[in-house]
Image 1 (cartoon, rainbow, N blue to C red):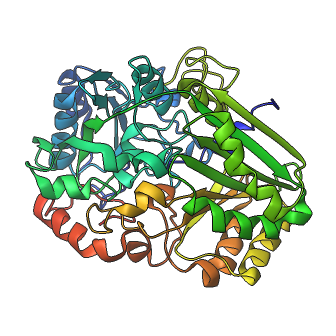
Image 2: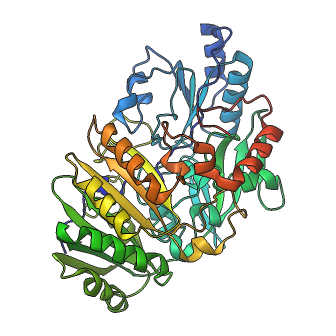
Image 3: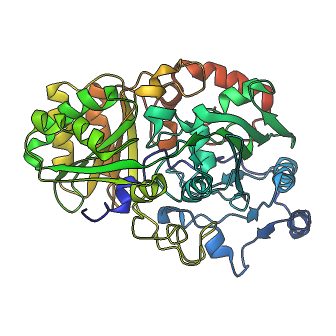
Length: 487
């Protein structure tokens, strides 16, 4: 088997938008030192302030571009009471509030100049009777590992250090979504601390409006999630595959993949990478919930439609190892498959670096025409270091009504992400996104949150936007929870 793909190519699956709350209007008065000391005294966790030895590490996110942001305080919440204490402080003191789970918000909205509520210590994962209880701060690699020890899992993304909270609240596109649905589709309950400081359990029978909105409405709008209940599925051996073609076949590969992947059997998920990161490359990567022989029969159609492969690898493995492979951590331990150093919520022996990137998204509701496929390949062919990533939808995702949850993109065939891997690459992502708009339209994924996106309300939420606004008005009429792209 060839070496595992570069970890960066998998950072986008499932959504990297952390649970985020953006800036409120400037505070009327600055809290005094005694105010901050009183907050610290009321927390079972801890409060880190400027000047503390751990402050520089505590304020960092996954993306180094936001290292210049200096919060007035970072609260490591140990339990829902700590979260309620922080929410009350922010409300009384009129302090901007930001909430951080994994710290992957593309727009940097899991930090700010006021109080950052970090839920990473609330990371317990347990399983009983087909149901998982997962703390909002749990990282995906740990969710897979701890549930896998019980022989079960939930559908989720592949970026190992993403917090489960941001993923689930925005929908949760992942590597088994075509079989088991989005992460939000198996969410049976969520506990939220709301603007008035109450801890509410939200499910189909209790606070059902908040439950609906929390399944795809995006983090940062309604409250601070502290815990989730998920329906699980049993795990078994699966097959992972990596197929490559020469760049000359790129446009043909796009047309063949989009005609095949969204309508393949539910057990098969795939993603197409068109990359100019270190060389021109066409790759189809995926996972099949079954044995290698059946997988090979399903994959045989692609060379017939595209042309001879440059290389291929098809390997049957355990479900848990497959998730490590998809995370780019095939040669690492679970503990090593974290960010290292003193970054919040990570491990001492973590080996995953932080990453500089720019990203934008579309949701493809119709196949690209021949001209559209040619245009997409032309965008990747431009100078730079960037990748376009297409993740197949359909299957179980598409069998749910667009208004059954807040996630509206049930009819989408696949998601599209324009991912540039170097500083200064924003111009390419911006131009590629604009040039492909006539072909893809104006749909976007809230977990790939885009601070520059015009018409974001309709793009993220479609016809569900008005209902989301009504839920917001009912539970946060004073708009304590705000972000630049907030309901």
